[in-house]
Image (cartoon, rainbow, N blue to C red):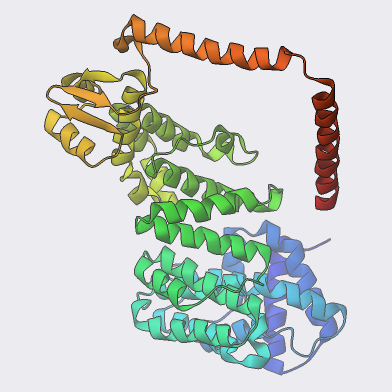
Length: 442
């Protein structure tokens, strides 16, 4: 009878700890332990974590097991080397999850784990065995123990050493790990300092670059550099592959991009809400977007109240609380698109503002309109509505119809034989060039 997932994980961690204590090198046993972990990692439950935690003593033995898991690739050859190289991420993550649980490990043990990861990274010979997840968990553990601020200097030197190594992947891991931990700690000033001090390597892998774009966009959005954040997040949205492996990343990216789009007073693209694997988690955000684009303050308040727990969980509650200004811009634009001249009191009533608040809002230049006495005048001369009178609308309709008739008549009129032949030759060349460039692109 095959042992359960809980028993297999117990055997895996017991084997790793025993190998470290006995100082034995058993390549076949290591390979079997790694295969066991891969087979069980999708079935991890709270009971499995409890059993694995019971197999490891607190203190030095836990740090020793961490070092064993991070350095398991040393001295391995062949298939075991490849398997251990892939498995290091899951092993280190599993042990850090044990360390992060409340009541399992004290502050001193957490510091030992953090020093373990940072020490392994500073060792040039073994720098490539530390993963972004381990770095993130190390920083997360400093947040949980309340020592993040005291260890900033160590984290900065950690990123600097990784950048000086010349390894693009390790530098990307270090920067993204520190940025993720800083954002989780709500220390956006420290994260912005890391961005300005360290250049992200352009030769890093594709997903690491996308994740760095997400971090940059969130930092710029929190600092209210909305146009810069919008440009970065739009690039990330456009280049992220729509594959099952990126569903979680695209969910977080879509939520942040939607809020930044609304904060910049733009209308979100409808395709954003129809992405496969993403549309299910955007229900609250869709109601929020509908209220903002329609300029309904009551609808916005209801959407914020309904989705407050979701916004807090996603870390977007601060950005959601800043949507009031974007709502006024969208509402005023909607009014200006329907009227060229309207009473100020009517606009204030529709937007649920006082006349003084509306006047100060218009004076900031959010929408191209002016207030003259008791009337609001839209500066767009092309806007045409029922408030402008029948004569003006009829005149513009006749002008538009005249332009269309001239264009149609120009197409129907016969050309001279010589001009027609010249046009056909030019058209033939144009078609050939266009086809050539298309082939060249492919």
